[in-house]
Image (tube, rainbow, N blue to C red; front, side, top):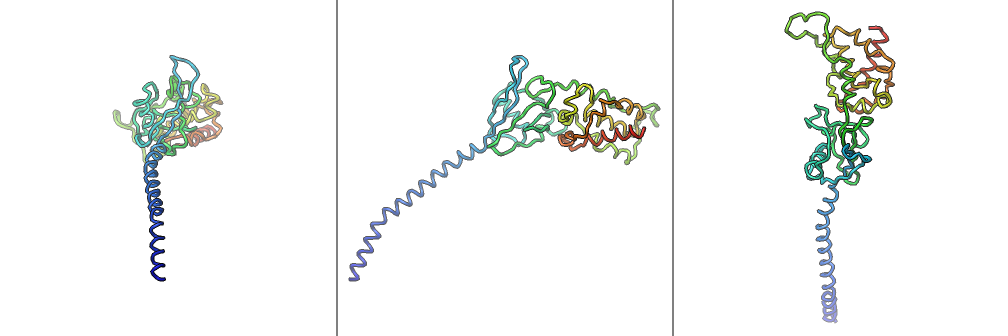
Amino acid sequence: MATGLVRRAIARVQSSAPAAKLVITRAHASEAEAQQAEPQAKKTHSLKTFQIYRWNPDNPQKPELKDYHIDLKECGPMVLDALIKIKNEIDPSLTFRRSCREGICGSCAMNIDGCNGLACLTKIDSDGSSGTTITPLPHMFVIKDLVVDMTNFYNQYKSIEPWLKRKSSPPTPGKEIPQSKRDRAKLDGMYECILCACCSTSCPSYWWNPESYLGPAALLHANRWIMDSRDEYTKERLDAVNDEFKLYRCHTILNCARACPKGLNPGKQIQNIKKLELLGS
């Protein structure tokens, strides 16, 4: 009796062995397929689509947003890195300004996903499922692709006479004019401006009155020289900007402060000019 039970148990084990081997084989096959699919999935996930504004004055058709696909594993972390890679490896006709790559020169100012900023300081969103849209600074005449005409912007900056003006000779001819630490500190938050135009081109008041309203950048620099203790033309500077359009088109919307890549607040400096005008300084 016992011998029969043992024989039946052995037969049962032998009959189930092929099925067990089949299960193990299938498991190994699934694991191998998963390992093969994983690199492909990672590669797909690292691809990023950049929609870039294109317009060529030599072929004046309607502007378009052109798609470019970049493998983020083969690209630097900043938007400017992607633009340089596209220009060098995909489309050499793509045109944009750039220089220092350190957030100092302000050349690579553009609109990235709806916000003005410097391409060299803006990190690429690593989410490959969503694209990045890059357009020129808003409400500026486009020269080509991402390059805008800065002539009016610089003329407005020039109009506030951004240099030291004195009526008397320096205390020591040929030497710098002394300034206390307290007076020097009054220039903080203004002298750091790099004239990238991110602030002015984010301002609705500047969009509506680009020829008459000086804009956040120019007015920030106007206040910088008004507040400089070494300058002796404070009243004349205040009189020069005391105009319904030049100064008072600022409605403290403060897009300028949000857009500034240097963390400055042009709206605060404009308010200081208004206060000085009110006090008759």
